[in-house]
Image (cartoon, rainbow, N blue to C red):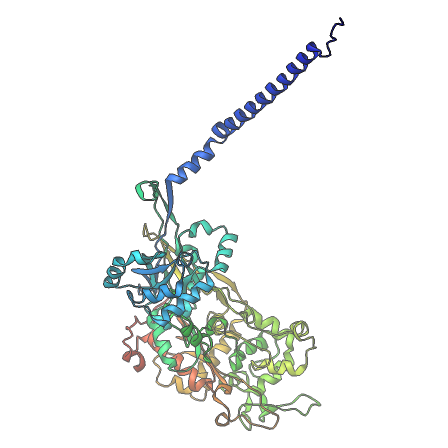
Length: 637
């Protein structure tokens, strides 16, 4: 019998088994090692991170919005204030059918078509998860009625808000400006300036005027509250609290009484007025007519009111004092006269014979004087008193555009003054380089002739004209114009006074500035173009009338106001300072399509000066209950 041959190798199989067992054990050990490493990482290395996350599930961080600073005039009159009110707000993303919900909501709380329009406008400008107001200033009855029906309206809440109010409405709107809801553009700016964290929970931000320019001071610092919550999200207790810091209060140099007098003096006419203290650059009045009710913008303006303002032919949203650019007309002549004297192009005794027009040698075109037949023999003093165009046509030709540009630019024309309100226009003092860059055309002598009487490419803002006039009144000193007089800490009451800032002093010869000064005083006396407004004045003042063309006239034709549409008529201008011997107020007045400066702009200036210097109220102001002002006639710096 044959023996069986064994084909299995037990020692080898045992070896393989042990190898596989070792590999499996190593793999399991590796998994445990990885698991332990992960545990160590989570429990030790990342402890603080996950502890914070766990606390975040238990602790809710709620921003505490600071009270916005108030704005006052120089005498303590409130220009912008806060008040508490209940608002009805909707988070659109939490409302399934918005239209039907609004219909149902209207049965509980009064919702007008304007409320719906404003809400839809806010929705287009905001994200759907934001809380948007459908109604502001709810009554106690409406609050109680909605509270009883709250269960029917998920995503709709009543919130207590601090709202802004502007008591003087359109009279001060272009100066103070307004706040309105923060939009995406605002968020981008806040993020770029690293201020976004300070606006957590805030819904409004300054848009124009002082509200925008001093936003950082007015807004304050946002506080935070740490609240412990339960599993259902209900508040259990307050764990920590960082109180918000209220915004600073601002005291403006503006006098609201003077502002109201100036506003009433315009009546229904369009235009602008800037009044300034020449001793320090403080703005006393800053009028742009017409204005608008700034309160309309706070909760988001409705479409109807927005269309009325934005599409109005009167352009009430345009800040004419700050951004309106107009040919300065004959108010440009005092600066031309100083250029002539300082650059030795004219002496006080030099005379021309004005026959009513000026012609360039070899050219047939006539540059007409405003007075048919001319003014006869005219020296520099008389050229200002009667506003002789022919004198300045000839002077401009002799000076040349480069001399005009270099000298007159020292008075701030053609550049921003640097006032503490954003959006200032630079105006235009033209030069050959500007014309080539802008129009790709060379400069002609005729261009210089037009610039000489404040026409042509010449453009100035009412603010610039007031600034330039201040330099004449100060005999060469230029102070920085500013609106804010003091910044007051709303917690401590400590007040920081904004110091006056001397920008520069022009080295003008005393005899030259005195000659121009005396001529400007004579403008308001018999024989001058503003003699009517100087009648019976108990103080002396200096001034210069101006008329700037809106549309041109053909050669050989004369301007006839009665044949021209109202909005194509000439603009009226007037610059002035008073008292002449010790100036306390500087003014520039522009009346759009007002005709001659002495007839429409100068009387407005006289009313403002009478009120400021004498405390005299015009009839229009008395009817409006404008408060009397302290007279400044006998004050000294």
